[in-house]
Amino acid sequence: MKFRAILLSLACSLGAGEGAAGLLNDVGVELTHDDNITRAELERDIKRESALTVSASAGPRFQLTDHDSVALTASLAATAHRRYDGLDNASAGLALTWRRKIGLGPYVPQLGLGVSATRLDYRDALRDGWLYAAEAEASKRLSERLTVRAIYRSERRRADDTPDRVVSFVPADVFDLRSHSLGINGEFAWDPRYVFSAGYTVHRGDIVSTTQRNWPVFLASRAIARDPVFGDDTFAYTMRAVTQALNLGVSRVIGRQASLSLGYEYRDSRADGGIDYRSNVVRAIYLYGF
Image: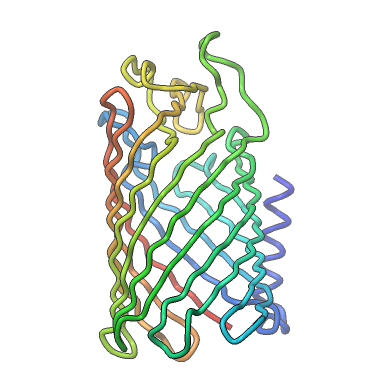
């Protein structure tokens, strides 16, 4: 995959170059374990997986007025999976964000609007494509230690190609997806070194589940395609669903510019036709800011 090789080389050169501090906003390393990466309901179809992601972001921020700022951010990321290498991927994105502070002082509300486009390149070409997103955020610092925020996000994913149909009358565009989510979270600074966080998100829209042949899932799906990443007789099904997610985390500041975070996410997804799945995701993130 030439595209991913270029991204990996670029990420390494940015991280190792003498001018990295002047180019980058931050670099990060994330280790993730997902106990249901296939988003499956039956035990026979549930696959567990771990992955390592290296990322970097860079870009200028412009202070337009005392209350308004605009940021243009470019990002690179590369992910390697432990067992299912078809999920290995690289991405390159560009985001434009506007923020407004309503008033003066540390406790006034802040608003933010952002749009982004991200190129997705996988070892498994079925998943290649583009991800477009729009986001609105409102946040407020309630005290010296407590901050709360609400976030609305809309996503549209477009795949490069549509595979052959498994069933003649069912579409195969399994990775052409639309979704919306609304979340609220809070951060509590226990002391200058430790920050605890908790959040709740409701996600409505398309999900992709990969299983063996499954008649109830078939009836609930709007698109079906073969998905050999998880085996020769597995299929990806796209369904409408409502997913609730609970997030908990703790972050420790390391020195003046770095942090180490541990996080846990519980997902409960209910799809059309009475199909549902649950998953648990654990992650550790090291982030260094410039």
